[in-house]
Image (cartoon, rainbow, N blue to C red; front, side):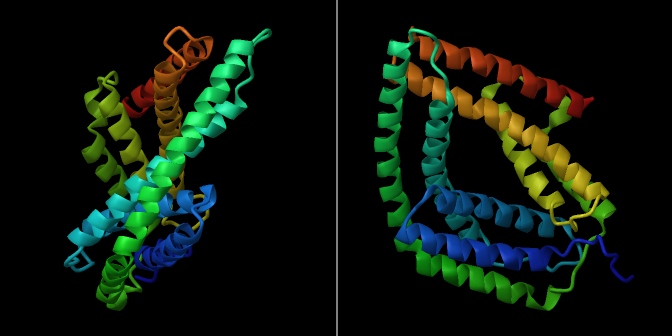
Length: 272
């Protein structure tokens, strides 16, 4: 059957992600800016999503020797994630407006920003060290993956089939229909699963179709979970360095509660 104009081309998309992460790695080795680190982290996730999607496709031969590649991508993603988390936290702090007569608030705010800057520098050292250490190995593994898939480049998926595959994968990973959205570790795991499912859905052409609508729903869920998780981490930093009774810490904890309720509401809707 001839592919429609809205069909997804997972292997071609994977090739595009490989080109992007190769460039992002080179940029991070030279200057790990916020943009470069974000691209490295996000693209490693997108590659992970592509590999998971291809494992669901019976038409694609089983990929060999990808374990080492996935471990390398996970290591670099975690290193980049640490840097990215500090960038997000500093951006969140800088966006907060102190109350009237908020001298202590401003002091605590600047204290946290300074702490986070120091932590970011240390995280950058670890990231660049691992990039240099594993660059050749990662390049080799990516080339091997590309070679394995060369003959399957024309493989395509229609939006409905792509959506069903991504939906089934997400439900299997998240166990979302089991309910019980109170455990922070589970909430974080669901958010990560939603992110990968979103990336699967985004394989479809950028037209209004079933897979794109699914990807939008997953993005909404992911972003709600991400906002809560980022705030939770920042509130922990504030409690550690500014104190549990700091007005800044209390404000962040209150914000966490609101964001958690919004995230849980979306999860209950998804489970219904």
